[in-house]
Image (cartoon, rainbow, N blue to C red; front, side):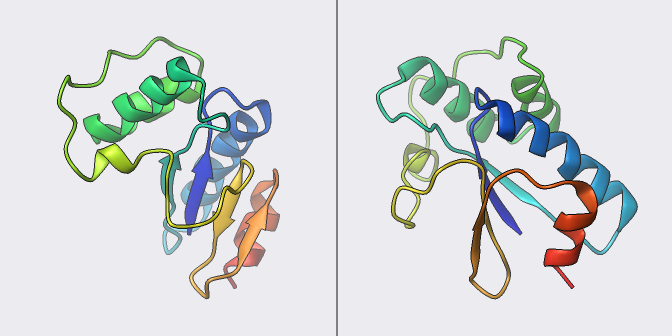
Length: 119
């Protein structure tokens, strides 16, 4: 499941915790969390998302959703990471999940509801 979330969105922060629980509960479940700023004009959030994507660090991802400061992204991000905040889907709200069958589901969900989506 691909998950578009913003580390400054309160529902995304809650969902991040539920994703962690779901992954721990079912080893066959995988989540690709893509930090995605809700407001394209919010440079601080964009920089935070870019730093997480560029780092490829699960710890930095967790730190961002825990409200901790993250290091600045590299001065010259890679071509792939320049797309942070501009996926090919049209301006989804956060959090938004893209399921393996292509369906998009928006909003916070608890662990069991997340797992049920994937069955």
